[in-house]
Amino acid sequence: MDNNDERYLELLAEMVMKQDAMVDELKLLNKKADTTNERIDTTNDRLDTTNDRLEVVIERLDSLEKHQAKANLGISEIRLSVMKLGERDKIVSDHEKRIRKIESKMLRS
Image 1 (cartoon, helix red, strand yellow):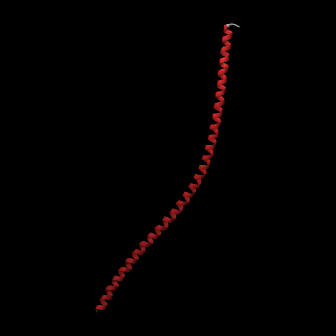
Image 2 (cartoon, helix red, strand yellow; image 1 turned 180 degrees about the horizontal axis):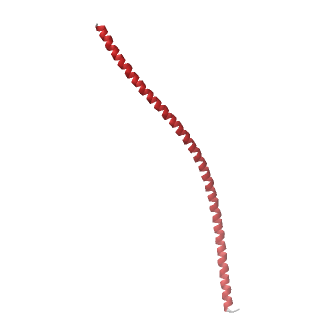
Image 3 (cartoon, helix red, strand yellow; image 1 turned 45 degrees about the horizontal axis):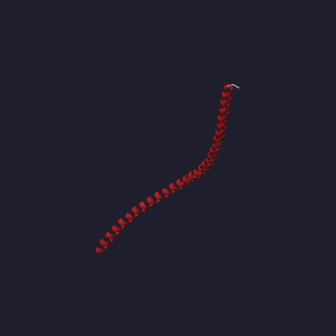
């Protein structure tokens, strides 16, 4: 064997060692990719669960908004009734004052 053959063998040996190192790195990368995929699957499952919970919350909020609207309508009706009652009370009070004036005039005569 001459020097060139030995050099070729050295180069081939280096290439084989580098390829072995690359294979090891690829195995490690594949393991990391598998771990990452598992984490993504877990995250997707959690996201699905969160979306389901959010849908329930939104339905409850819609229901609460309807109840709030009904309550506001009831409060408005009560306010209107109180205002009308106040007006009637004023009318009754005014009539009472007039009646007292008439009674006092009648008692004087």
